[in-house]
Length: 150
Image 1: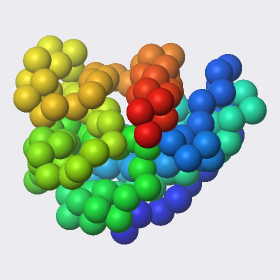
Image 2: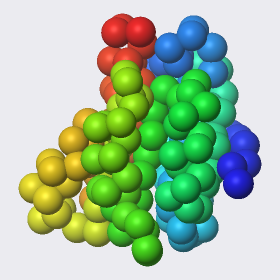
Image 3: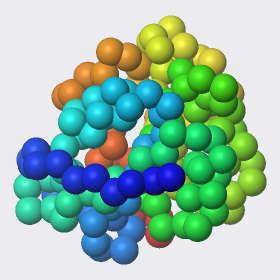
């Protein structure tokens, strides 16, 4: 089941979600440590003065599908290394089945897996170890691009 979490680490550029309010990010990993690393790297807001991010964390593929079908997300961050059902397969399924699917950021185990991630139709790929400088920039760019097309 998803839980909302917020953390206090301001960023330098203001970015809002598609509704001009707090951006909503669904974060999927079966590993609680991975979810924490992502949240800490991105921070609680995408820029100075921007609204706090609304994080929804899920640990199962079924819950990802359920949450995305409910709607309201500006970005999906999926762990490509999750056990049982990895983020690559979920990303591909969502891109095939969900009309106007939110952008997908896929976390891979290593940089060399980016070519494989292209099959999933993910909008962006970030490899481990998570870069706390790169990840927030990629997240902000994906959310800003979505806000322009929404």
